[in-house]
Structures are given as C-alpha cells and as structure tokens.
Length: 308
Ligand SMILES: NC(=O)c1ccc[n+]([C@@H]2O[C@H](COP(=O)([O-])OP(=O)(O)OC[C@H]3O[C@@H](n4cnc5c(N)ncnc54)[C@H](OP(=O)(O)O)[C@@H]3O)[C@@H](O)[C@H]2O)c1
Image 1 (cartoon, rainbow, N blue to C red):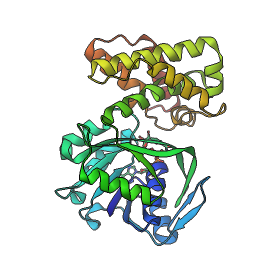
Image 2 (cartoon, helix red, strand yellow):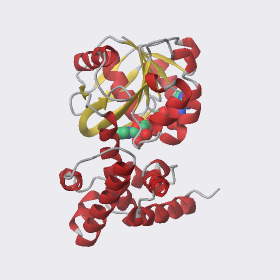
Image 3 (cartoon, rainbow, N blue to C red):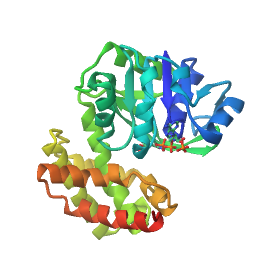
C-alpha cells in the first residue's frame, strides 16, 4: 500500500517503520535533523520485540513530492495539527483515508473540517514510543495496538485492507463498531490519571496508592464519562472501574507524557486532554470540578515553566 506518515516521531516512526519494514511504500514527512538522519541512515526502531532498521527510507519535508496515497498516518502532536493539515492536500486522492492518532477527541473534527468526514478515520494508538534521537525511535512499552474505523463506525473495504497490511507488518489493530468510544475511553484515562500525575509530580504508582488521589482520579473519570455521554458517546457503566484497573496495571514508576512535557518545559497537550474535558463539559452544561482543578493547576504550572 502507499502510505504517508506526517510526523515521524514516537508513534509515526514506530508504526510507519513497521509498515515500511514489511515492504509497503511509506513516505515519512519530517523536518530538521531528523529528516537529515532519515535520508542519510534510514530509520531505526528499538523495540522490546526486536530492533530493526529500514534503509533507505523515503523521507521528505514536502508532501507535494509524495502525491496521493492510500492512507495518511497523522502523527503530530495536537498543537502541531494546523500546518500538518495544510500539508495534506497533495496526499489526498478520492479514496485516501487520514488516520488521526492524537490523544483527545478533537483532532478528527479539526482534520474533517479540511478534508471532509468521509476521509477521516478517528483512531487511537495504544503504545508508549518516543523519538530517541535523529532517525531513531524507541518503543518503550504498551501493546502497539491501533484502533480505528470509518467516522460513523462500521467496517469498509479500505479499513479491512489497511488492517490486513498492519497484520502483515506485525501490528495488532481493532476496528470497533464505534471508533469514538475508544477515543473517549483513552481521553478518560490520560486527562485524569495523566493529569493528576502531572499535578502532584508523581508517577502512576503514587497517585493510585494514595487514597485521596485515587478517589480524585475516580471522580475525574466519572466526569469525563458524563461529558462523553452528553456528547453522544456512551462508555458503559464499568468504565471507571476498568480504567482504574488499567491504572493499576501501569508500571509504578511510569509517568504520562503530559507530566514529562511540563517538567521539561516543553509544550504539552494539556489543552487537548483535560482542557477539552472542561471545554466540552461547559458546552453541554456538565459539571467537571475535579478536571477543572487539574486543568487550572497545570495551565498555571505550564505558563510558569514556559513564559511567553
Ligand atoms: N508517543 C506515544 O507513545 C503515543 C501513544 C499514543 C498516542 N500518542 C499521540 O500521538 C501524537 C504524537 O505523539 P508522539 O509522541 O509520537 O509525538 P512526537 O514524538 O513529538 O512526534 C511528532 C513528530 O512530528 C513532527 N512534526 C510536527 N509537525 C510537523 C510538520 N508540520 N511536518 C513534519 N513533521 C512534523 C515533530 O517534529 P519536531 O520535533 O520538529 O516538532 C516530531 O518529530 C500525540 O497527539 C500523542 O498524544 C502518542
């Protein structure tokens, strides 16, 4: 298949790398030193499942050099979406699907405003991966699972075709009846457990063991479920219990990217995670007091660490 990856970082490099290693025609859209290294040395993926290098790889800063593809993996951070969406034009053919993998629930909507809903597959990535250096991506943990589907759910020939390609590349995927349930369930975890780790500057093992923070996470999760319901997405009665159980399975020393980004004075995805819960809650008249607290503290902390 012809695939373009916009943003060849943690997830773009990992999933694009696996597809390229399986022989698919993958073009990586990248920039800076990373682009230079991809062109010079190819892409190296370090993974607990085995390291591999794909060389040479097709890498460019300009999507006009790529032309129409079957699938675009859109793998930039939420706050980097604007220019990435502007770059989609030359990649789009009549059947092209853009798979959005950002944590949060607003990226597919933003992309659909530019290319139309029929061209968007709302998706999630269940993995922990990061850019370890120019041309080098590290899969730190997580299943490496992709969930995605057509906008209104249901299967399609092109979804099945891409899932087959993923299976052949050693990547597990699911296409749930409603792809939005997976997006909201992921947001429910990262906006709350992720947000609270960043708030108290402690890893998962601490916030789940302290009764007060555990109770706050549970309350915040219930708020996200209520906002999802008000937005037309039913996460089910067991979602808080299941998400707490997921929190209990995380490595005790694990921290969310939100926490690391704020500590490192990098721009975080706070606005698209806990910020989105607060924003969408306000829009539907759903109270979100715990999420508002987490968001308020972190917004101030990020502003303090990244002045201007
Ligand atoms: N990493 C994970 O384990 C994981 C898991 C699940 C979901 N996600 C979600 O996936 C998204 C991406 O996360 P990530 O960790 O993979 O981010 P990342 O490692 O920072 O990768 C993003 C890459 O995109 C590049 N980029 C941004 N805008 C670009 C543009 N216009 N043209 C070319 N390259 C561009 C960035 O380059 P610069 O460095 O030059 O900006 C960077 O190399 C986030 O929304 C995150 O929530 C991540």
